[in-house]
Image (cartoon, rainbow, N blue to C red; front, side, top):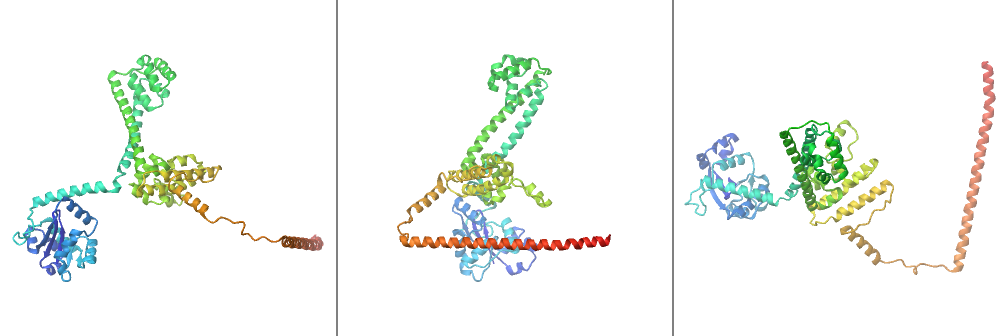
Length: 515
């Protein structure tokens, strides 16, 4: 039995001695046989070794091994050293999929079971290319020690990691996922810090919280004014912060009659430092929002056009990647983010939610409450198409997104009672389709009035008379049928009245008997 062992240095082929004897042992005892280097030398013999030429070839071979593919170097190696013995020798491999490929393409019987895995584990832990071989017998095989092999393994692992990170299509949207997560965290932090500034500075100037509602403006005023007594000297600066001179004068007038307590200078320093943090975090939050907008326009332009960059980024974040989002059907995209409500509804047998994260899109916000469910379903269907184009398409324009948004808006107008006509496509592929249809209609055979069959005047008059007679006969038949129907109804009514007159005396007689 032969064992295929793939190392960082190259492909190695070991011959298993006493294979029949070892296969009859328990798995635990097989592991004991390969626990030491002496045991490996006793039970294994290196038959062949094909070193990699450079790191690029090693990375390519390792990638093929991870993906269970049979590469050209491995195929040549097996043909050279196992091809002649294919019918009589069994090859042990670690990957069952790779074993099936080798069997199909090269005709070499392969085994991938617990016994083979245990043998390869012993080879991996103890044996290295050259350790079990004789340099005199295997002159083309370079003898590598444990240190050299470990260095090769480390270098190959780093190269493989860089390769996978560089070329993985799923890693492009990682920046979007991280950015939208950081955006949420920044919102929480800014609100917490701003609330703390208001509570802290409120001991000194409590009236300012009602006059200035914006957190950033509040922090800037605290940083600029510090003590409220200095506000009268900084009217111009306050007017610049608030963009309102009247509001600045009102703030100064209120500061002069404030009922707040005095604050120590060291305390004011800490309050101002916290206000600085609020201003800086707000500025960074704005820069991050701009970065997220540009990133979403580059990665998913059609989805951004439909639902906006923030909602689109949240959908991508919830799905994990834009590729995962593209695999979801429209029904899943519609309720993405409302999983708890969905499972609760299914458990309690209540109505399932109509929308999740997509609820925050501007198109759904424009709809009336009774129409939000319908618009969310339409929008989710368009989003499913748009994100698939973004993930799998090669174009960077948002043509499909604009056309889909126009159709959703037309549907919204239809539900609201406005003009329900679907807007025609403005550009891109739908426009091309319309143009093709118009061209086909224009270029086709038109209606020819000359080919119509025209009757003579006499024949036309005769046909007209016949038509009038037939219509009159139909009218007469209708009148007769109506008259017969009326007579039948009158007879039934008379019969009903006569029966009623007969029943009345009988009832009177019964009453008299009872009396």
